Image: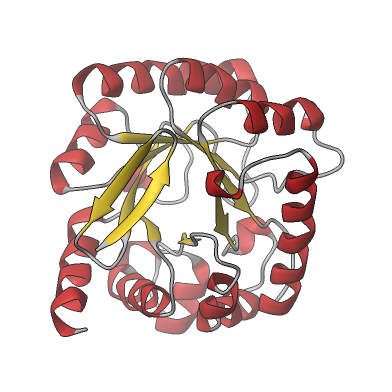
Length: 265
């Protein structure tokens, strides 16, 4: 059994890892089948997703940024309705402090932050203070170039910064930031997937977000819509090496693969 503390609750699964289902409340996310609203969110919950990750701004290469106001407009109605009708754990995928703050006030339990807390981030000190003083879980995602060695080193630097703000280690989940959209070449992403265990050795829960990304395409020669099998293989390898959450577009298929892994371990 896996268990992990999220906000004020402990969630558990008999599978080898938790499944985070992707809901992109955007018109331009790279995989069009991930785009949607409440219908998609409740479909993923019905399929068995442990966590629903809602994003209001695409992070695909060359994405068009949107304002905090627009993100809030896209995200908050979903958070409210999911909370009203389900006990699913809600994660919000945003690099803007004010967007997550608004979602947290409506019940979101995880801040999936793709910014990697850069020095130039507006309100960074406010964000760190908010993380320290409020009861939610924070995903620290690496954003930038690097193989596993560089990623681990730079994550350590940010963990030290968070320690200086008295942020409890229990609140933190690590994500190495796979993909061209997060600064990594396909070769760097593949190197990180192969060495997931080195990140897991830091004794923080690790999330892997590999679903249908370009590195899967390079390894399989497949376009985005045909990368499910490659994604499943890469995710299972990551779980075998210690990852405890996989962020995916295809929830039921991922659960099937994890159930097979459970029986064969």
